[in-house]
Image (cartoon, rainbow, N blue to C red; front, side):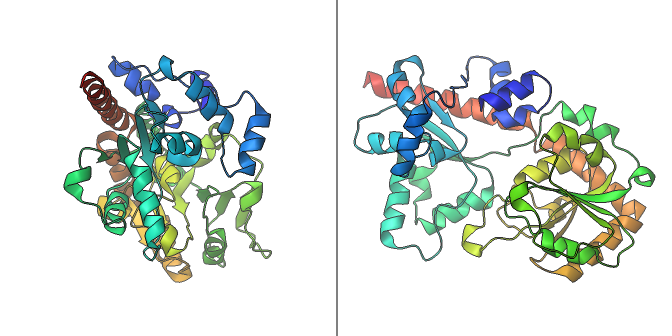
Length: 359
């Protein structure tokens, strides 16, 4: 997190990557401290032997617990396992606020896994789900009583830095100056289906990925370019600005359906672009309902081709999708909306903790 904060201070990255810190502090009354990620690497190596990541940070949090009121973990249990274990047994009592991006378990998980999942959830004073369907699936699969959990659960839209609305979104290039389609990302990406969809089409595709997410396709058509050398989001800005649409091809097993594609949706909003995305009911925005573009079936090459043709050739449709992306950014999904919600959550959790201490 401190790296993301440093990039924000340098103007290289947006405030969304520090998960509401900037907007919360601007609202006043709450300070969000970015706790150092790692100081003693050897402790993390020991932790990995026991399946505990970020053990160094958790031990330091334990030792410095009197210096803060609430632990805020945007990646939930990823860096809380040790502290959660202590909290279950009453050895650590600090309130925890987390954001949840992924499902807790599959439909057919056994009773033990369900019990452990419920036990983990009970350690969080507030769980903020990044989409409504994700919260609903969690409640259903864990057979939770909504009345019992309603004070702990909420939904908030994690969105791009609000300053990007004027800086990029409203200054987008017109349809005539956009040159190619673009897809960027690395988690659960189905670049192979996307490449097949572009075979024989008169349009260009630029794919930006990481060395670990390079498409397995060996026969890359001449109208497709794959680049894994760009590592900073700021370096992708000129490419996004000249794109016709931002494409989000996804692949994942049904039981792992979560908020895959959410980061790329932020790029769609930031640059006010149309999009085509693989259907994902847990995504924080349903692009067809909002008029931002199209959803297509997983691995469905023909659906991809059909929607690509529309966005590349129909200026009126393109303009409509772009305007709707801007509307969603301005009114529903942005860093201020997220920050305001988290501010309310922290104030509520803090007040509740003070009351408990007095009892």
